[in-house]
Length: 508
Ligand SMILES: [Zn+2]
Image 1 (tube, rainbow, N blue to C red):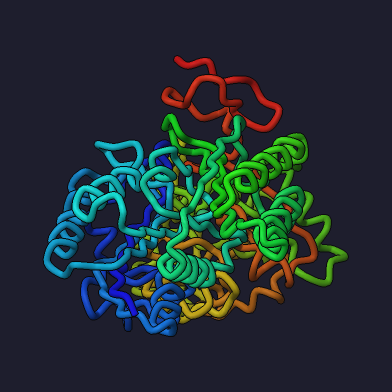
Image 2 (image 1 turned 30 degrees about the vertical axis):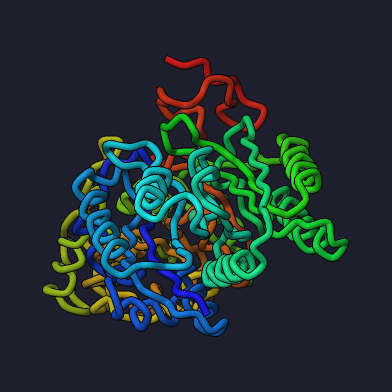
């Protein structure tokens, strides 16, 4: 039995997004738990599909003493403020000194955190932790699929273990794998070799999905390298590939991989094989993008004969990647073309949601909705909105991604523009439209809707692909730019290509 400190600090930073991640965003609950410190952490994360929930369960099952530090996450946005980063660090700093000594540490990290004062949030955190606990202590961290896995992170952690699915349906499972690896490394005390590689092209999020090729085959290879090599006893203990989070203007942005094992040559060979496999698929990271008008027209046409919903993915307004979740490009196009019966969600507009509640079900309010932040100069969509149903925004997720998540997202409403027959789901807090319960909360059964607009890039696929006739990918103005060519990068490392088969970044 060992004494293992556990903690987490999660943020996915889109440095091009308009809103920063403040301390308040980390403290409050949304789809994930609020800031948790000390003994309240273990019950506080239980039942959520998040890495720390899986990790603490596995560590306890293996008979270890789990010592909770702190855990916090904020919705993806722009830079984490220096204030938020330092307040969180102050909690870690105090607890690591006060609650020790420890035999090992497990951390639940994202891997794409950029703070106002440091480009590599996780690298900085690991550096500060090492300064307290020393270089020899086993530290294993789990990482999101979208980590920009930096050389510092690889060098400072004993091991890093990433998700293998996008939509992320293996988050708690990844925590369990990380905890299992930590236990193994502590018990065996054998030397561990690491092979780290960075790939030299950015991969747009929308083509990183593991439900489709080429990511599907690449992650089959990740599984094979870990399991297959193990069975041949070649000493590979862990394989992680992170396709990266492109909307981050930092030097170490981009895909990377890291392999751990006891046999140096086997570790290097596995890393080379995986890197070559990703490079070999570069051309395959591609697909069709439609503008809002084309998407609305095609959806109306397809819906005439479809038996299931036509899903329109509003991929650039994904709040799960820093989008404001209030852009109106797709909504306005659906209204313009009178896409009767279409429903789009979640449109985050707290004032409009409150106004709908005040107006009352069955009544009409004439006002604008959406475009609260006003990204790309957009204006709210003014219409006679009939309030069909209101909700307090408290419900539990049931899909593969958000299953078990206890949502507390404030006033919600389903409002319908009777002139066009188009409806919007209004919400008060930014959460990604990746669970059918978000629609059921306002009385909409998603499988019965002819056209369903979702503000999500990929995660929606876990719960909505099974009920969709087809999925169209829409490129409407939004803060999560799909084509890295359109992002005003300044700080990428020279030589990286801006997208698969794209031009090389030369610096500015
Ligand atoms: Zn992710």
